[in-house]
Image 1 (cartoon, rainbow, N blue to C red):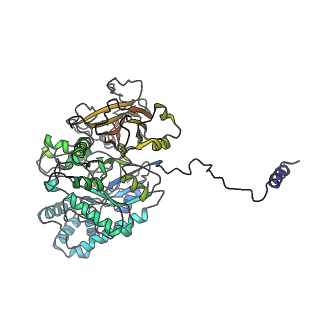
Image 2 (image 1 turned 30 degrees about the vertical axis):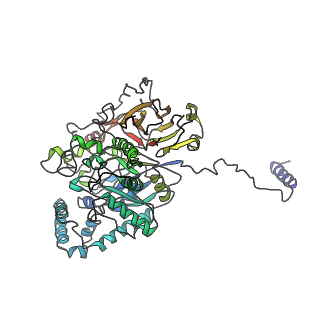
Image 3 (image 1 turned 45 degrees about the vertical axis):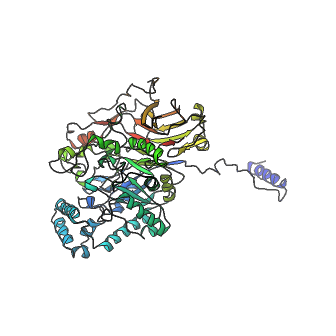
Length: 622
């Protein structure tokens, strides 16, 4: 019998033995994944990018609009404002264009010779300066006018509205659910006396909702509490959802995590509830320095002095030591525990993410592909660019931060089920996010009370973690007779550097109500050992060749994981825990620039960097 005849015979025989009507759907799903709903993907993006629609970008030579920014983020090659070809090594999964709400679209108005703008005195002056090639003078005139009398284009709100509606239209056009998410957003740029109280505002919604209310500006208010009222009004009017992300507390001169409101009142329960409601996240790392910790606040943390900006703000007031505790994330998390014990609500109970704050329309966050803070600082524009001040004013060296101090950071990593506006926004709202300084480290954290070391090796690691614990960003609720246990996994960026170590940073209140902190090394690469005090004192070393520059993954580990149990847990003490993952040293962008452009690294500028990731915390309350 031939093969075909044998197959026919087999099929006919099988069918002949099936009694009609006996095929019944199985009661239990055969696929083990049918009922899975937990977040199973990490998505990397930028929640803080500026285009030419921001006045401090478009008036300073950025000619790229929202479309260019989306195309670049999606992996296309674009030409920068200086004509250089630029492309990401890998596309981003999502992007928030967060242009400043103040004078939104002013530079494109000038480029398009907007008739309404040219009918105003200030508009004609700005137009003439820009057309004469005097962009910096035009920006200076706009800044002085704003400081002296408020909104320079106050009578053009209908024109501003048209540019906001352009932005939301571009977001709709480039949003591709499942492939690339364009979240609608803007930046509210409060700057009392030049101190940074900026917030990025992000919508869960589409153009239909976002267009119903023009973004709030600093001309409307500089008080965050009034921003929250505006947000509440938006949700009431549209039925939508919205959240705000503060950034750069290191440039706030003590205002970001102050014990007083901006109006000078002592924080109360209502304030704490409102802030916790509207600001679930904090942008802990970006171009203008890293805001996780400061060496003066954490003197036993050898990794605390990282990309530090502590020379004042955008105003004239220099930094003083008493401001620092009210500026950095770790200290704010500790202060939050104190306030929660007093008020019953924690105003500083935030998750952590990173983003770029790039003003070039290019979300470049890796050291070897960094296009600077603004277009004037793009590669090769001017030989002295690294010594140009970013903050402070002429003659005020004590409050200046120079261009070489800018960081090629950072990225927002979001754990979600799918790449859509709704799924990503919901993950941000529940704080299931983490920050990286620009690389794509993969990081998982689960906390519970019944985890065992063997659970690290489970093939259903994530499913088990959600079923028996909580992920980053959540509250740990356990019986007082048990002890917190943690499962942590970290993997290197597939196109990046190996890992040095995993750490857990713990903050807690002692029996006297004083906030304390301690760092534990829970996994280290190589043959190094962790001492009995929970620390590894042996550095990972370095494989960087500064003459080329290159590095090798001949040290470190591609993956690290750890089970950890808090050895000092006291059930009556409030606490938080977050994970910090460190890479091995790699060349910093200043070293890449020196090699590519034939320049010299300025004195004091580092040639190498240890990139890192910070998880959102897990909180424990008695």
